[in-house]
Length: 337
Ligand SMILES: NC(=O)c1ccc[n+]([C@@H]2O[C@H](COP(=O)([O-])OP(=O)(O)OC[C@H]3O[C@@H](n4cnc5c(N)ncnc54)[C@H](OP(=O)(O)O)[C@@H]3O)[C@@H](O)[C@H]2O)c1
Image (cartoon, rainbow, N blue to C red; front, side, top):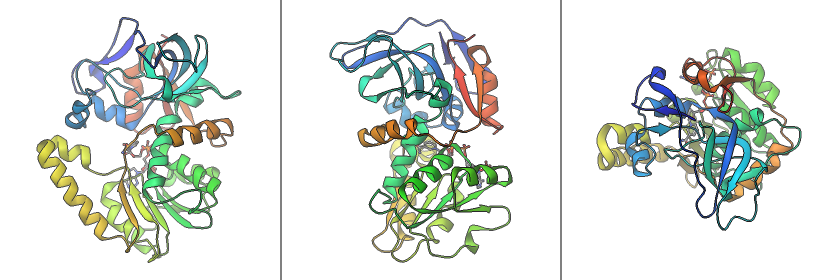
């Protein structure tokens, strides 16, 4: 059973369909999915966003099953896999494909699977990997490491979102001083996540902040990118954004034209960072080092976002929930009808 996009469009285009049980290939396992998050990228991909670039990975061909995160139980093990057995409780994230985790069963590379820690539910775990691994890529892109981050001033734009909350918690774990922006409804959550200074973005424009940050992270809006870069100190580490226009430009101008437009935009952005600082447009990828960090983080997880669970038959309502930015990270329960 899977939540299937049969044509690009609104949430009404989703259909729950019977699907053949997947069989694991070499190095793969099949996971019976107890919970899978629905993220902003899923609702945008459902409407066709990124279809040209994702198409190169075979991840935009219809019918399409969305979803990167999964938490559940291993139910089949492919040749060459020694780390997992049937019945193991696991979680993780898979790279974009057309066979995502919004399904009763998902096939994943065994390298992208982690053991579920005790005392954390599958629903809680399902909201973690995709966002966590994306945040790790952003920290790396901005030059923030265990060695460089302690004591440094970091500005997180969009702290109240899925990425922002994890970034705040990770940066505090690394010993950075975190300033974050949020809308009115996200201020308390950012404080709870450990931010040192929480700014209401309606009351204080980015341009009013001092140019003293070692790193800036943009999880909110591309239009603010230049203003964030301008907040970097002369000896800054760097800036990273997850809200760059790469996919949209390729959708609009085609692969070659979009790549050129993106390159030009990236050059303009990079021209604004101080000499020696990094400038990165980051994309989600399950890197090995970040997966190890995720395993540690999940055990000690302190920040639990508000969650909103949806049964498989409610998948369209779950997409609307994410689209309309209602309170609570959306989690799909694919084996619960
Ligand atoms: N490049 C990648 O591979 C990748 C991976 C994951 C996510 N993303 C993108 O990264 C962004 C953040 O993801 P998420 O899951 O954290 O999304 P999210 O939960 O929807 O959070 C978005 C954050 O941005 C803020 N925000 C939204 N619109 C804004 C605006 N116009 N001006 C200022 N702040 C604004 C929101 O504040 P309020 O809540 O107060 O509105 C919230 O803090 C999304 O756009 C997502 O598509 C990219």
